[in-house]
Every structure is written in C-alpha cells, then in structure tokens.
Amino acid sequence: MTSTKSLFAGVALAALGVAVASPAFAQSYYLQEQSARGAGRAFSGEAADTGVSSLWWNPAAIARSGREVTFGAHAVAVNSEVRNAGSTLTYPGAITVPVQGVSPNLSPIESGIVPNFAIATPIGDRFAVGLAIAAPYNFTTKYEADSFARYDAMTSELRSANVGLVGAMKVTDWLDLGVGVDAQYVKAKLTSALPNLSPTLPDGFSSLEGDGWDYGWNVGAQAHFGKLDLGLSYRSAIEHELDGDVVISGLLGPLAGSNVNTGGTAGFSTPSYIAASGRYALTDRLTLNAQVNRIGWSEFDNIDVVYPNGGQVIRLDYKDVTTGAVGFDYAASDRLTFRGGIGYTPTPTREGERTARIPDSDRWLISGGMTAKATDRMSVDFGLTYIAFQDGDAHSDRTQYAGTPAAVQSSLRGETEGYGLVWSLGTRMAF
Image (cartoon, rainbow, N blue to C red; front, side):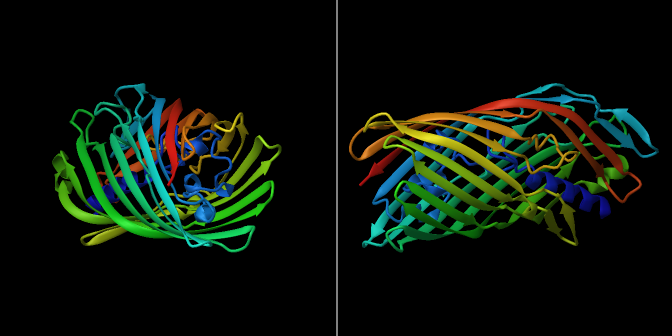
C-alpha cells in the first residue's frame, strides 16, 4: 500500500542518511580517527608518512617500514545541544500546530570509543603485506520519546568494521606503490515517532534494523626525495545493501492498515576519498606536514529502497567537499617527539537540508600530541583534539503517509551547537 511504501522509505532514509558522525568526527558519517600518531597533528601528513600508522590513508606506507604492529583507541566526548525553533505538524485540512516536546535536547550525540589496529611485514627486499582493521563509520544519537525532534529522530545507531588487506612494493629507491582490498560490515538501527491524525492521539512508532557486508579497494603511491616525502592515494566508494526488518506500530484509525512487520533492503554508497600529502624536514628535528583531501560525498546521492511489492529512490543531494590540515613533528630528543596541527572540514550537507539526525556543520580541529619511545622497539603515541563546529539550523521537511488523503507534513525547525574532545592513545611495536 502507498502509505506503507512511504513509511518504509522514510525510515530507510533516516537509517542510512543519519549515518552521520558526531561533531567530534570528521564529517557526516566518516571518522578519520584511525591513528593516534596522526591525531596529534590533526591528520596533516598521513598519506606521505611511512609505517602501519598511515596504512588507512595510503597502502604504499608499509613498503619500507619493516615488521610493525599498532593498536589504538580514541575516546570521543561530545557536548552538543539541539533546540526547538518553531517545529510544526500540518494535518489534513491544512491544520498546522506546533510540535510540543522537550527542548533543548542536551547531548543527544553519545560519546564512545573508536578502535584501530594494523600490522605489516616485509616479504623479501621489495615487497610488504599488511592487514588493517578500522571502524570508519560509528556513531549513536538518541532523543527522548517526548523530544520535539521525535518525528525526525529518536535512536540512531551505526556500527562498522573495515578489514583491509594491503600489498606494497618498493619500486625504486624513491618510489613506493600500494594496493588494497576492503571488506566492510555495516549495521544500522533507527527508531522514530510517527504522528497519528490528531495531536490528542499518542504517537506511532517506527523501527528499522539492517546489516550487511560489501567490498571496495584502494591504491596509493609515495615518493621520497631526501627531506621531502609526497603521498597520493585513492579509496573507492563502497556500494552497501543492508538486509533488515522494518516495524511500524501504534498507528490508529485510517492509518491502522499501515502497521507492518516486514523485511526489505536499502542501498547506499559510502564516498570515495582522495588524499594528497607532503612532509618536509625543515631541520633535523622539525618536520612540516600538509594534507588535502577530496571526498566524493555526491556519490551518497540516492538511497534505493526495495521491499516486497514496491520500492523507491530517495535523493539526498550531498555535495563533494575539500578538507585540509597542516601540522608539525618536533623531535625534542631521540625518545620524545611533540606534534601539533590544525584542520578545517566543511560539511557535505547543503543548507536547508540539515536534520536532527545529521547535526553536521563546518568545523575546525586543533590538535596536539606526542610520541614517547619506551624501548628501541616500542613507542607510545598520544593525541588530544578539540573540535569546534559552527552553529547550525536544523531544517527538515518530510511528508508522512505521502500520496494518501492522510498525508501529514512534518517540519523540523531547530538550532544546533556544540564541541567535542578526542583523546587518542596508541602503541607501535617493531618485531
């Protein structure tokens, strides 16, 4: 039935479109917290640096690094606020009422831990292989059942695990090449409220859970010219198809026929990623870093929803963005290195299309960190990052039960603000 199609599509859109990171993350639903060493310089030199700590950004990084393993964890603490700024519901007959509910919503974006692991070993004098496990998409947002934002979002969870296998080659004394394949698991859960046909009636409820494995690839190159190191890499988009279950309940009267418990799929694409980086040893102790990234968010353009006897294509209209960061490494001694950096990341969300699920906005990263060499074979990396994101306006219009006489227009109007702190700790060991 048409109303069921609209409800399923709306739920699927939220479940996948909300794959958004908290303000402490990189942007939308991508996390760049994949290296404690890199966190100390705002991820400004990763595609040009060598070793397993840079494996996520460039598969060529392990071509000449020897046997190494790294473990890392990033503790993300988020302070955020979402306030009502005139949200409304418009019922059949053009009857518009304000949405009542809790406002402001304090810290709807939950804090958490982001882990990473990588290992590499040479094969002969010119080749190396590596394995990296990362969580590039990982977040949770929660609003109370009586929040003003409940028709847009209640619980939103995204979990991911990326397993990457990499091969690298030392082509010449100055050129390294690398290639990798990725197996990526994604699990998503979304809940939200649904309006019945009168503000005096209790809300309905919708829930979607789904998961699936899909695959991608990456390539990279590094050039080493004495004091200057250059890196260039490309990570492919990954087309995901989540198999899951949708449950819609609590709808009353003419909407009661839309209560369902069924299965379906929803397809979306993670963005492609190009990184260009340079590192220059200004002195024997001081190295300057810079990195520019081009992220193909326009590939996250549509969500294709398929379910028994129907389907729908939903347009998201994300835009490609360019991010950048600069930083430094300063070797105070043979066993202690200090780092710092600053980065800027614009949001791929277009103005007028920001939802309570996606409080994404432009943000600045300011980082500091250090590496302590505990032994000749083991180093400990620490990083601290402060992320300030621009205040934004939440603006989301959606039609519930579209195409039926019972269509209800939900208009979210809100204001968002906040900041985040990320503590990064990792260890690197040669063996």
